[in-house]
Length: 198
Length: 205
Image (cartoon, rainbow over all chains, first blue to last red; front, top):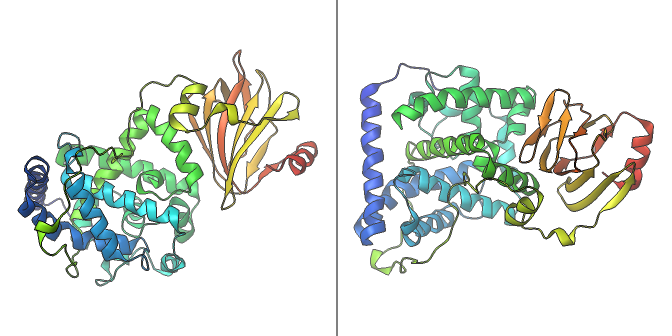
């Protein structure tokens, strides 16, 4: 797992600026049909969506094709984006998540995803650049650095590896009740943190 | 979190969609999870580029009339009880329910079964005490009408009870009206009493 480090306010300020820039691009797509702004968003998000989709175990469906579906939805449905309700990155994430749900419903999740259960969650974020490791370790540390390790662990397994509560419980050898409890405690701290900075 | 990330079987999703629509606390949690997902996505590693659409001039027209639910944290307003949930949230027609009497005032209606998860409705009279039981896996129960106690916890219309294999409970209907619940149950229930287990063989819950 990523090392817990003090909050880097300069890094957070840069992230804040990036978040605002992304949202400004999406607003240009929405309001003006700006193809240049869309191209920029594509460059920023398409590779990340592909890694996200791979992390969820969707392989044979074609991560690139799924990414193109999601980015096409960013373009065609941009008029539904409300910058007052969400940042561009949150909105695009929900489009990718929704597409994943559609695929999951049409086809059972591949057994390949579950093979990752053998991975050690304590090292998962530090492992190379494989498809199961789509989140940068230092960035996760920035987000989760004031959360106790055991709580950060369940958040990482869910968001980075795509595990369900039950899969996390099995992987960590804890009860599903303990898993949910750790999620609740992590969310409580994240709400305080993200309510201010994001 | 499972709901926000799309990690739940369809029956559990159906129940949580109905609950989240009427519960501001859960909507807040879902919104937080989606924001966190957005941060994870935007801060993600980039290992290689993805084939684009070629000439951006080849993009299709933007859709002027799209109705898509982007966030799962949608407020459907204050709930109006059984009919509201059935029509607005669950997309069922109450006319299609085929209730089956179990005796003692209990009735059930089986809706779906997929991947060892059954979704069913349970109707019980005021004051009725259900048999003590536990579960083989997860169970979500949404109150559509009336109310019931489980131990010291009161579950009213719109509330959801989250149980699993570590939970042993005995719901008791309270108030002056029938209680109707929508439940999604993984595996079978495990009843303590012999009579309940015999009834279970017949009914198949």
